[in-house]
Image 1 (cartoon, rainbow, N blue to C red):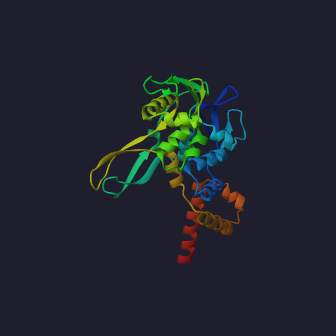
Image 2 (cartoon, rainbow, N blue to C red):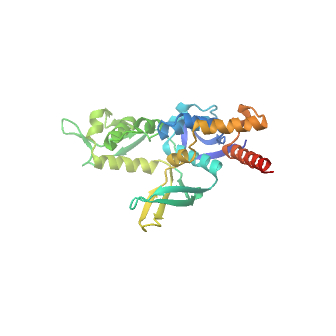
Image 3 (cartoon, rainbow, N blue to C red):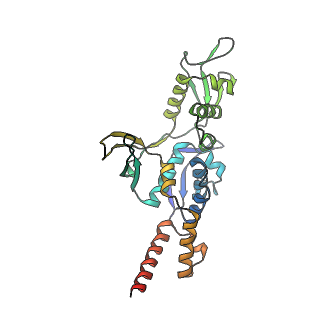
Length: 293
């Protein structure tokens, strides 16, 4: 088992210390089992559970709890998911998309090395900004409050809004969770609901300016209708779709290898997916050869 050591583009802050170095272990059968068991849950929750299983060390923190993973900012979580994806499937990726114009399936391929990582080293959990006067929150006395105290969205925030169909409701919830103060007032539902689209846009732009980004926009053309469009690559959703396996498939593979090689369940489940499937393929080929001879 080969661990991966990588440096977060942002950093996890605890008790005033910033931790950037992470040691990851590859995904094995136990993590596939976990993904299958959480199939009905949101991408953010599965990402939290998966990273909590695969992060061996974050700075001096070991083991790394789910609460720590929830507290990691989005760019860092996406970066770690990209690394897990690379070690599991390699750098070259093939995927199937639906053309938004003609609804036909189209096959695409790209390299994970194309993903742009914008580092934004974190020095503090709390940030401040000043809204434009015309978008600032206006209280009942007509006073406009422009100063905000906030933190960047983390995994726990995304878990909280994951699955909300109403975008405005989701953004309001995110503002409630991430903004601590507006002027000298504690953030509440009334203030969050009063911040209109222009204010929310300024807040989003400021957060984007401060947060590390791990992104890839795929410029595509449909081979059927020649429609050109751009698709943002969502590493979490893609990874979990690529890794989709039901428990019956997994346990059938474990049984097949255990029955023929007399390996224990523990030994098989501690293999990487690639190694396990390699043995399944070899064994199927050998059984076919024997039956045909």
